[in-house]
Length: 171
Image (cartoon, rainbow, N blue to C red; front, top):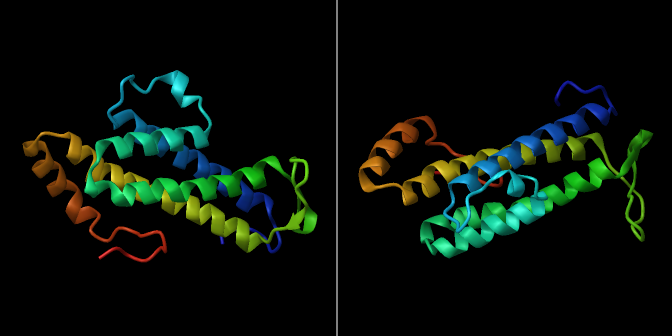
């Protein structure tokens, strides 16, 4: 359980922020390879995650490829994960798991160590699935046919057991 002491929320919260950062970095990598009218420069890298996700979804839809259905679902799933991350990171977390939101009209609630650890793991798994979608579907789709064959022969043996959103191996 990430080496946390019983009831400790600080260490698991650190893993949430760490894995969310890596996940956002992978989203940046995806946006850098997706075809767009303007290249993906520093100004866009400063966008919020929500804005990046919406932009990525639009670019993926514009490709109109049935091979990108998993990618579309993966991008949609991220919205809920990052919303949970924002609630934890931008809220005030007190001893015993009392979480008080900084948003008006939002009631406080309790979070458990297990819930925070689960979110950290979900963010990590999401990042890995996004990487697989980018490497297995987006890059080959945008590459000439000779590069597709060479690229797929490199990644297939190493990643033949990819994870689905439920954490179980993909056939």
